[in-house]
Length: 449
Ligand SMILES: NC(=O)c1ccc[n+]([C@@H]2O[C@H](COP(=O)([O-])OP(=O)(O)OC[C@H]3O[C@@H](n4cnc5c(N)ncnc54)[C@H](OP(=O)(O)O)[C@@H]3O)[C@@H](O)[C@H]2O)c1
Image 1: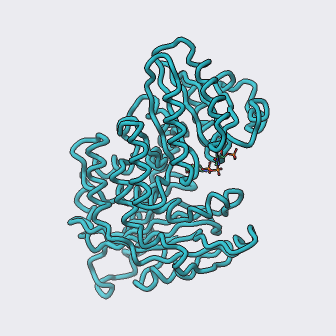
Image 2 (image 1 turned 120 degrees about the vertical axis):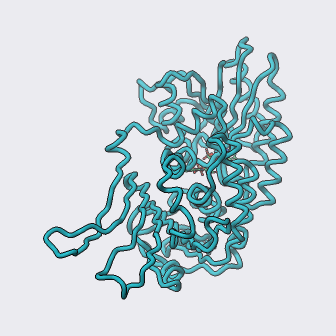
């Protein structure tokens, strides 16, 4: 079947950095489709091609088309319809895949445009899909509202809501590690786990994305989607089968067991205010503590910190296991047993344990058993967006959150969304906000990294 991606936001950061390379790789691998990139900035195909710096040899040559498109202009809709007509020709077996990579405030008009374009295409009956980027909405109510509009033109089977973290190999590995190794099943609960830390620090700031980020902030950009999805993967029960429906069923149990998060703090790096005249009330850093109130995880604190402009880029999960003896019973200081799952800079899993120190009478030393994804499996792990797009092409919904997961996740972060009335700490660039430090230290713990 002939497939055509109609890429809204074709001049945006996501499309340039992630989607075009993914399309290119998939074409190289033998998939066959066209991509129509829509954007306002460039008037013609030539300027667009030079903007993205498309290589002469690229498999996208001849497959990538550009249409200057603004939601406010009806003439651009006509240009899109004309191009679609010429690509469709007299082929009858065809699927149009509308991919919305726009800021959420534009979703509504994009969906109405799509409905209109689709209705005006004549000829054979066309199959269709729609792909929407995260964050899906601004809050629970807008997510429900957008979903209703989507469902006025698409069935739920045709709707793909993207959270590209689900396309990361590491997320799928987490489930395999937890559920394919019985050794972990016995200890993956409140009886053995003391607490969990999730640390996602970025070194870069908002940069050119200020206009977009200003409306979004860290909670909508990362916590409501990526971080809560990671928490579901860490704490969910074993699904009856590894099917989209069964996995989503288990994830929802987790999301519905998280009470709306009230123990949190927001911060903003200090140089952000120089990026614009006038105040910017947008949090760029967030730390929070939450509980998953399921039978297995009730009472296990999960500490999260994530945001921009930090000293070091790192993405890791620290699972601290309990120790049962008091320190006076111990012969010496033993390191806490822990599992450290690192996504960035390398994909590794370490088990922190105590081993005998050579040449010492029963002396111990903390060591790590290490699994390194790349040295074990090689560097050919597909990029997240490559996996996401491939799943869309083959109509496999296993890597996409359901609308119920999305609305449950909005409920969990609801208290954090009223940014204009919340206190936002100002912190020096490249430093950890004081509120993030005290969040965990109040409980007598420290961040692992
Ligand atoms: N960037 C990332 O790494 C990333 C990662 C994951 C998810 N996402 C998600 O992807 C979406 C897009 O993010 P982004 O970073 O690519 O944003 P961006 O760089 O700000 O791009 C926004 C795009 O929207 C287009 N646009 C704006 N107003 C328009 C209008 N009235 N009519 C038609 N087009 C219009 C812009 O076109 P012109 O510039 O040509 O005017 C541009 O192509 C967001 O939902 C974001 O959360 C982004």
